[in-house]
Length: 130
Image (cartoon, rainbow, N blue to C red; front, side, top):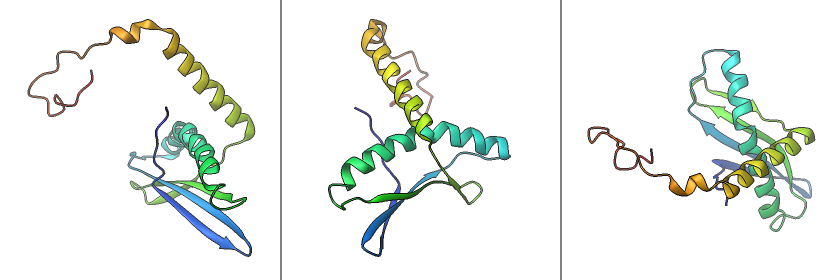
């Protein structure tokens, strides 16, 4: 299964229709415009999954609800970033997810993965999976 939590979903009643805004808060460090572009591309697959999950869940509650917008809120710079996903990007993201799951399913080397020798002084040693 794929797991994710949308940080915030605002549902607005506009006339006789419902519209939604999805917002996810991120703590990434942003130093320049290139960092913003990198963060947007990194999180597009997550937002594509949110979009699918939202439509599956909320269309059963609110008939024909429409996603008005999806946004990253970058806490480091206090800025909302619009995440727009084209149909071509949706198809590419879906294909990449399918290939990743097929790879994991068809490669037995994952069965033999073991926890490494983490230093006992490491503050993450109790939860580290490496």
